[in-house]
Amino acid sequence: MQTMDTLTTLPDGAAASPAVARNTAPILEVLRAHLPANGRVLEVASGSGEHAVAFARALPGLEWTPSDPSPEARNSIAAWAKAAALSNLSTPLALDVLDDTTWPTETVHAVVCINMIHISAWDATIGLMRLAGQTLIQPGGLLALYGPFREADVPLAPSNAAFDDSLKARDPDWGLRDLEAVVEAARTEGLRLTLRREMPANNLMLLFRRVP
Image (cartoon, rainbow, N blue to C red; front, side, top):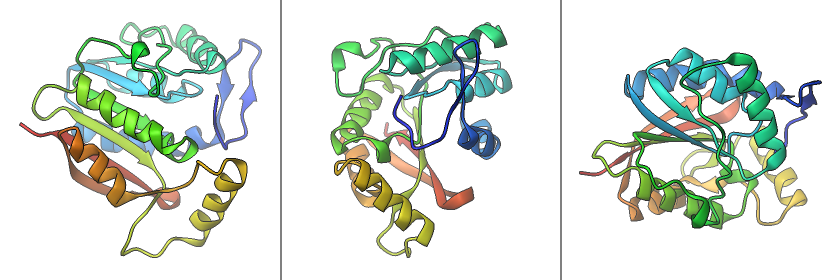
């Protein structure tokens, strides 16, 4: 799985992420306030699967479907899911935003993507927006993004600048994305930015809604 985090692999194959332990509660607070009480949620690039388990447990009215193109990640998601034994947590999909043949055909009420677009090429962001545009067909359908971003009128925090440098050193196609470019990519697929929320550690939560 692609991550800048230091993971600990447990005996059952589940991976534990320190970053997930830190950011789950603040992300959940936003999701709880804006997701519908009932419906289907598709999580893109679920990574270790810890978020999926935590959110499915905390939001029992939602059917949560995790996904990741990495077999290693899906093994970790499956291990966490087995231990949690939650009836509203589905089997992880082998979804790759760069390969639309792997995309689900069912519509969903929300798409959630955490810490992906800065550790992938820009084409992955475009693919994510196309996927959201295809699966969020009901007016008000929600796309929730979390991670660090660049903003034209906001000075970049030194920690984010250093993080951006480390990302680009690892892969020149990676790096913090300009918020304006992300908003425009979403707008092209009929999704409008409705909330920008500052989060801990210089991250943002961005919520987009399907325009009627």
